[in-house]
Image (tube, rainbow over the protein chains, first blue to last red):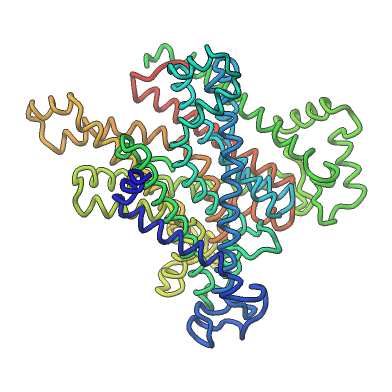
Length: 281
Length: 328
């Protein structure tokens, strides 16, 4: 553990990312204390510029506090990011494990299925899913999970393919362990590090995807989100630049932090691969 | 690849593409049925604009009284003859709506793609030749930044900077409203409107291509044939252009194919921000009106575009790189 922390700390960007991430977490956790009451309530006059009348980041077209919106939006962004990543991981890990461990026809079928999902324009598909199942936090999480599992399936499959012929797996088979328990207790724990690295990047892209959906008006209509704030500020950008600038900065900082932490995790978990990164997000 | 084996390769890829397109149609069909409510009301739009007669006509058209597989067959036949349904909202066939907007979207994505590839490959080459120096770190920082920024927000910030504050460039539409222009003036007008949306869409991919080019160039530069070329006394510029860059471009081609779907998705957001009259804007309007026939049509058409583009990159790759496997 201390070894892990030492390697993580060596990546300075990752430490900065971790600090930003902790701050966003604190903001989300203490939002009801920092900004009591609903972020939808009018707090002051409309279009108050930042820093005036006690509005740190200004007010929007209905006199709502932009800072309160950002703080409350942080809860939703982090929650959607985490939950949809967990959902995508469970789809991706199951399919990848089946393909990699069983091989043969199962592998072929799963990989064709995965390729199909990687071919279709995922954002258009996500829009379609949310629109058809009516916008709500549930349909948003579902849509994000459905379009983000393929990379997990690929990574897990590759890990399982290489691990299943190792001696310790063969030993477990000879001992008569069931397939399911071999997969869960012998192979999966050894395949965890790439999954961990991937999931931090997936949370980041889930947050971006959620913000894009709510920017288009597909967010849960009862929840304040960062994407919604930017969408609301879009038409009045000439009047109130702060309405779109600050929520966007919040998204940028959070996603950047998650990406940096992901790189740090990658360095710490498999130092060998640290230099090969780059390219696809 | 040998040219004589090209037809077989093309056939296999063509079959694969056809299967994917078929799967997309089935996917659309299942979605219509999975949605809450009767498929006819889903297609007509839920907000109550459809009258009973229209609903009855839709039910008949989809064969909703027939068994499931017959319904699927009717739907398949419809889509494959480019009958994507009728938009009750806009009182026009969906295919007409989409084909009207297609050129604008192709112009936008094409311009963004060209910008991203040229600038990205140039920057990546620069970074690879100056590893560890400031240009290298600047490019890495730019790439990291654009990975983490929502594309629609980049668009808004460019509008804020170049349209609102500097007043250099128009912030919406494809042409100046209320002015009759012809010839070169009209082209220049569209070009001026194109700069901000294309830059927005292209910036993200610029970062991706810069990183990719840098990584593969560093990899290729270590290989023996490059050392041989240097040892033979080939000038440095020529080594970079003809030996390193040419080989480093292969992953860029592959990646362009993979990214095609994302480029289309991004164009929905960019067209929404800049009111660019393309398919993305059509999808956004359909979204506001809950016009599912149009949304399903947009999903189908964009998917087909991606599949065709993938086919094109596969072909390009096979022609450019003689070592490519003819498999699959």
